[in-house]
Amino acid sequence: MDQQVPIVRKLAEDVVNRIAAGEVIQRPANALKELLENSLDAKSTNIQVTLKNGGLKLLQIQDNGTGIRTEDLGIVCERFTTSKLQQFEDLTKISTYGFRGEALASISHVAHLTITTKTNGALCAYKALYKDGKLKAPPKSCAGNVGTIITVEDLFHNIATRKKSMKSFNEEHLKVVEVVSRYAIHNPMVGFTVKKQGELLTEVKTNQGSTHIDNIQAIYGSTISRALLEVNDYCNVLKVKIKGYVSNPNFSAKKQIFILFINDRLVDSQGLRKAVDQVYSIYLAKGSHPFIYLSLNLDPMNVDVNVHPTKHEVHFLHEDKIIDKVVDAIQDKLSGSNTSRTFYTQTRLPMSCDTLIDKSKEKLEIKESEKLNNTNSTNVSQNKMVRTDCSEQKIDKFLNTSNSSNSTLMLPKSKTNDVITRREIKLTSVLSLRKEIENCCSETLQTIFQNHKYVGAASPTWSLFQHDTNLYICNSNNVLQEMFYQIMMYEFGNFGVIKFSNALSIYELIMIALELSESGYQGSEDKPKEELAHDATEIIVSRALMLNDYFSIEIDTDANILSIPLLLGLYSGQWLC
Image (cartoon, rainbow, N blue to C red; front, side, top):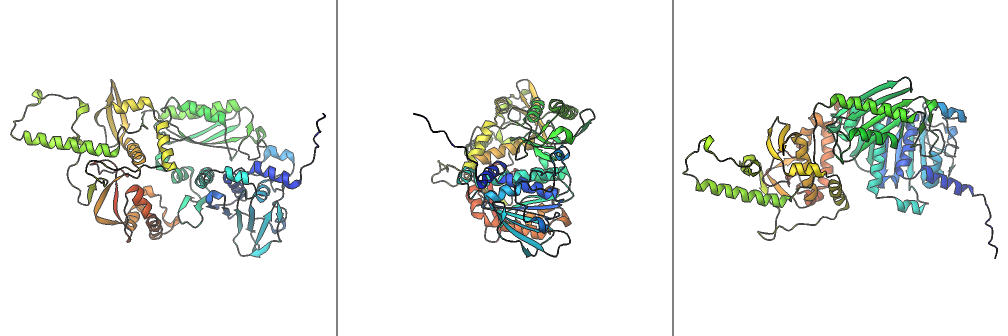
């Protein structure tokens, strides 16, 4: 029996447009990237992003750029309409982010799109609503500042499978924050802000006219910004300029941070990424990663930007040679800074916080008993003393037995004197972080730290310890931070309590913190300290129940802190530093 030959049909225009939109806009972060690049092309110096439900319910971007002419609002959301390209040959010298004319069109086919814009010299702003690339009604005049506000609502409302495939709102939110963070680092002359709708606290905030280092510190923290080496090189033969910042050999992170811009475009290059990893493999332990921010400027004639609808990938001539040149530039910087090496461990602690408390109490009781039994004994001269293995040092050597004047240590409450009832935590985020710790564990470093012998402090920051016949130096602060981080992960929801005799005002603590350089407070460029402290206090108080339940941080109705978590038995040092 003859099979029926299928008929070739031309797809309807709305089907074609929706398919094309799915290629360009794959998730909220893709939509944000396209809109962000439009704002930068419009010479904006201040860009604000507002999100709800990770950008799926609401994704809004506001800038102070040139705006869109009223005459252009009728076609601005049609496919292949752009102000940046006129003929194909222009691609060889294109200097703007956008050139396809597909971003707004694609968004309008998968979301409800609203554009509010005003150009310099215009009497008022205009607001227009779009559906499937077309105006729903003529633009209406309204009040507004020079620039553009683009509001995207209900993303993928008409593509059920795409919407269901989206990950959690929080993960989509983090993807958007990551995109903005990378553009903020690359464009320090532009101020960026990201926040959730209805919240005062910003996720990202960089100031206009800052520097690359300032923005790296604002986004990733001072630990990274202090560990950076500047890369600045030029090759006349390949016509490539290399600029950026890479972490020194003493820095390592659990996750790789690789930021690459080629001719000011945020792109990825697996070849360059692998080559850089290979360079750092001789400096960092397995499972550790560097921080990389690179900006390559190539001759536009040698770059093909028309490779992928999302423009996250580019091709360029002499790729292997350029990668080698970048690697050489990084290697030179690392070699010049490699005067000392620091190793950190990411191992799961061998016992829980409760076990440590019990063992600490037991050793102290034994020590007190020994003191009572030997009250009348005579002193023994140094050369007659019996030397013991350093692994059996008495624990009281490291403990401050004097009571704090303002705090009391309390164990987690239990139903009996012998058994502490532990709560099993099943939060996905906590389990994921625990898994991450275990996956990043280095067996070699784990063995070293489990069997090391403490030698002494070389300085307030550096400590010496021995393993077998090798002598090591480590950054004590970083090791302690990692240790307490792991305690917090594995004891989450089961902490003991340090109760304060006198309640501490959250507002006053924040005011003190804002005086510190680490706070990043910019003085006249930011809100008044009093206003910031008031806003932050409100946010903390609003989460009082959660903080008490999970972290043993008790807050009263007068915005005072009554307790903080006890992470390690009989230790009340500066673990929050």
